[in-house]
Amino acid sequence: MAMTSQSSCFSMSNHTKERVTMAKVTLENFYSNLITQHEEREMRQQKLEKVMDQEGLADEEKRMRRSQHARKETEFLRLKRTRLGLEDFESLKVIGRGAFGEVRLVQKKDTGHVYAMKILRKADMLEKEQVGHIRAERDILVEADSLWVVKMFYSFQDKMNLYLIMEFLPGGINH
Image 1: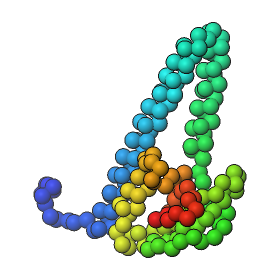
Image 2: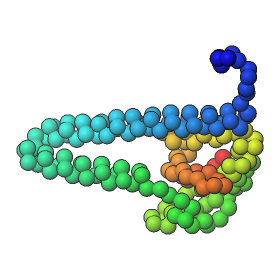
Image 3: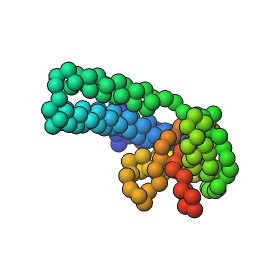
Image 4: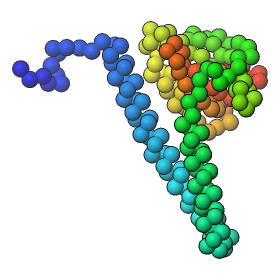
C-alpha cells in the first residue's frame, strides 16, 4: 500500500513537528545568512574599488590596499566563527526575571564590555511550545537596525539554556 500525503496511517507528535520546524528554520537561516554574508563581502570589495578609483591610486598602491582588505576580511570571518560560551562572561548581577528565565548584567572577560544576558530555559520553552516565538525574537533582534530595538551581539546555547547577549540599556527593560 502506497503512502500518500492524505493518508492518516501515522501522525507526528507535537514534539516531532516542533523539531522538524526547528530543523527547517535552522537550515533556512544558515543558507540565508551565507548568501547575505557573501553579498556584504562583495559590496565591501566594490566600495574599496570605487574609493581607490576616485583617489586615482597607482596600481601598486591598489594592490597593497586589496591585500590589506583581504587580511581584514579574513580576520572578520575568523572572529565570526569564534564560539562563545558562558565562561566568556562574568555575571555581575540579576536585573530581571521572566517566564522562561532571567536577565543578568554581564561583562565580557576579554574586552570588558558590559551586556545584558537573557538566559532562557530550553525545557520551559519546549513545554510551553514557544520555540518558534523565541526563534522569531532572536531573528528580529539580529536583523533589526533601529534605535527602538535593542541590539543583540551574540547568542549561544548549552544543554539547558539559550543565551542572548544584548546591548545593556540602563533604565531600560530587556524583555
